Image (cartoon, rainbow over all chains, first blue to last red):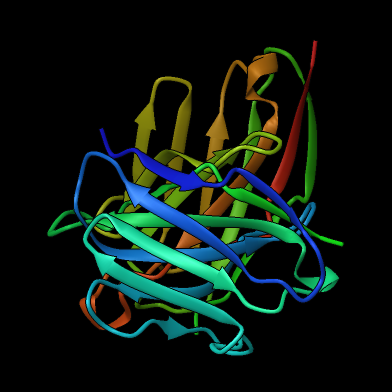
Length: 116
Length: 115
C-alpha cells in the first residue's frame, strides 16, 4: 500500500519550453503532497507544499510563477516548470501524506528533467 | 525553521561491521524523526522512524536512538551487507497541521559496504 507514482520518469526539453510533471497517489487519498528538487549528490530540497483544493505554499527562494503547482484532487498534484532553462535541470520528486493518517511521507520515483 | 545536520557525509565499512550515522536538529519542538534510504536514481524509502516520546526503536538490523535533551538522533545498522550501500538521509519534523508536517532533511550520508 501507499504507492506514489510520477510521470514522466524523465524528460528532455528545449530551453524556453514548459514541462508538466504529474504525481499520483495510487492506493490512498493524500491530503498533502510535497514537491522536492534534488541536485546530484545533494539532499532533498523542499520546493512547495500542496494541499488539495487550495493554493500551494512555496518555500523561500522558490518562484511560484515559474513552478506552478496544482492539486486538483486527493490523488493528483502537478508541477509545471514554465519557461525551463538549463539551470532547472534536476531530479524532481514528489511525496504524499496519507489523508487523516500519520506524518509519514511516501515518495514518488522522481522525474529527471534535462533542459538543453 | 528547522536545521538538520548529518555526519559523516561518507562512510565506508567492511561487510559485517556496524555503521552509525548521526544527526542533530535545532528546533526543540520537533517530534518526528524518519530515516530514508535512497539508491542511485531511485526514490527515498522510509526505513525507520522514531517519535519524541520514545528513546530507541529497533527493526531487525536497524535501530534509531533519540536524545531529546541534546537534540540528536542516530541510525545504527548492524551486520552490514552490500545491499545496505546507499545514501541515507535523516529528517526532522514538527508534526502539526499548522506546518503541514513538513520534513527538514539532513545532507545525506553515502554508505559503502565493502565485500
